[in-house]
Image (cartoon, rainbow, N blue to C red; front, side, top):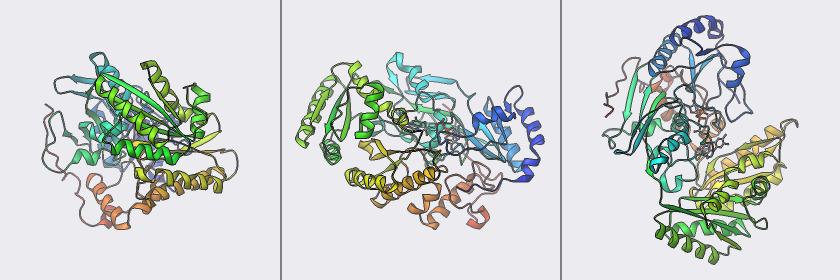
Length: 495
Ligand SMILES: Cc1cc2nc3c(=O)[nH]c(=O)nc-3n(C[C@H](O)[C@H](O)[C@H](O)COP(=O)(O)OP(=O)(O)OC[C@H]3O[C@@H](n4cnc5c(N)ncnc54)[C@H](O)[C@@H]3O)c2cc1C
């Protein structure tokens, strides 16, 4: 994996940059000691590590604006970082760049039940948002499995998903507005509590932009009333084809479950051994389907789902009889990554999306690849969304095994594209899938996407080396980009 060659001129100016940062962020907000920098040397894609030039931890928007302005004027690269749980290397530091940690932006600013939204700083955890409103019977719907740790700013940057996103949408469907600092230090507001405004969907552009367009310093998200009841059903199938059929038939019957997750034999066994969730061990595929809403509706629909599953050929059907039992069903799914992690020194978690109808074909092809590469693979995924998370097990201590695992992962993603899917469902491109972008987009497509990047960051100082396989200079891409100081955003009032 090639990153842009570090700029030795910037590295030589490290002392100067540190002094400037210490003026902007007084106190303990500038980290320069090598041992302390090590805590920031990777994100959740820990196979790749790089010490940053320095880490700066601003505490307010004004400081972020001054930091970015300094970097812009002095050609210093900068990498935004939330909680560092990303799985695609989006927050991987640069040797000649500042890592900008948003961890001190950890306050909820306003809870507005009338408008059903929360205004929060970006460093607040995903779960922290739900915790702030659950006593009043509300919650924030997108629920990545990392929700206890990942930040809402990181969720917006990655357009994160989770179990509930089938019914309630991804982050992009739940974000109402952001405050964002552009590379030249300009602070802009996009969206807000109001309904969508006229003009281009800039909020859509920002959501999922992986820290390449600006630094998010405030987020407004929608909150929802917690459902009256939720019930889950565990369904075991002798083949993954039958489980795939069941997914298709439930959706085509007009039922959109609150969650619809699938695990294969390997994942079922690992999770059961780890948390004793009560999963059947004699099946090839397990579905957990949750229905939520008013009690009568849930009772009716859960019966319907069980009926469909039996018709399709489920050999194990168990409906949760209490909330504890429902949570126990989910405990295995939620702990599936660490459970699989116990069986191997290392694993990488892939993330591709396919049309639901291709599930069983793709699983079969993956099993063949597993034999070819002589590496085990466990499958845990958001079946309703067709979002796969194959976990490829390897041992980094064995020469060549990591490279082999990466090749296996790349073949899986190519297969996703081949069957009409996409390279990522929710983890982003980062560096992990960067060199595979050409499998999905033509060179012209990629140039057009980079023109958008150039409109926000013509000098390409924000998180360079991520997402795009070739770094074109903006001048090469034509004259679409706007020169310094010319970019004007409407001053949208907050309320
Ligand atoms: C065990 C585990 C389970 C996971 N499960 C899921 C899951 O179910 N669904 C899912 O979608 N993801 C999942 N993830 C991936 C990860 O948690 C998400 O991508 C999450 O949104 C990253 O948030 P973060 O705060 O850790 O961001 P980071 O990793 O710090 O950063 C991610 C990207 O966002 C950018 N960024 C961060 N903050 C800002 C900001 N304020 N402004 C601009 N750019 C910013 C960074 O530059 C980087 O490109 C999982 C990760 C782990 C380790």
